[in-house]
Amino acid sequence: MKPCALKFIAAALVAMPVAGLAAPGMSPALAQPPVWEPEGPQVKNQQEWLAHLQGQLNRMKRLPPELIGVLKPGPYKVVLGFEVDPVGQVSGVAIRESSGQPALDEAAQRTVLSIAPLPAFTADMKQQAQQFRLPMVFVVPELEKPDAQAGTGAPSPRQ
Image (cartoon, rainbow, N blue to C red; front, top):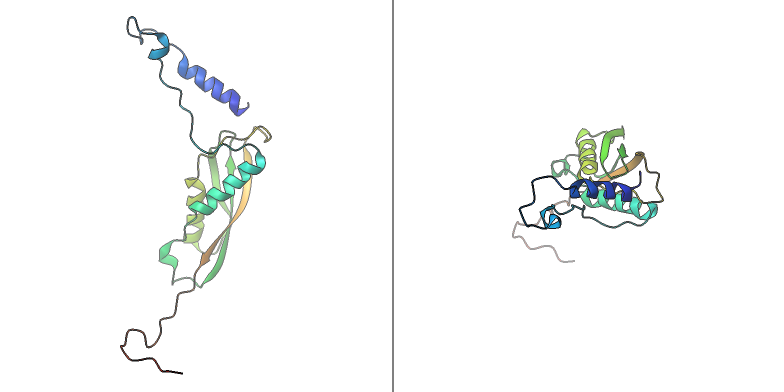
C-alpha cells in the first residue's frame, strides 16, 4: 500500500463521524478532530530518502564522553543492521560487526533508534519493509598533551 493511500485511510478513520459527539446545532465538520500529519522533511525520491537517513545518523551520533582518554585515539567502526517499514518505523536494530568496544556498539544502536520515525517511503521505493546494513564510524580524538611548563609561571625559553 502506498503512503498516500495510508494517509487517506488514516484521515478517513479520524474524520469518521461518531454519533452523539456533535453538540446540537454544531456543524459536523467542526465536531471532528483535526487530522494529524507527521512533521518532517518532504523527501521526493529514494536518493533523497537515503541522504536523509545518512544525515540523521551523522547528526545524532555521539561518542560516549566517558570513552575519551580511555580508548586509543582513532576510528572505530560498527556495522549495524536494521529494518525500516514503509511508514518509517525502525526495528530489529542489531550489531552486524562490532567495533570491539561494547559502549560504542551500544551508542551506535541508540543512534539508530533515536532517528525514528523516518519519513515514509517515496513512490519510487518498494512499499515493503527494507533491510539496511550501514557502517557507523566513531572517531576517538587524541587528547592534547599538556605543555610541561604551562601553568608553572616560569617564563618559556626564548629561541
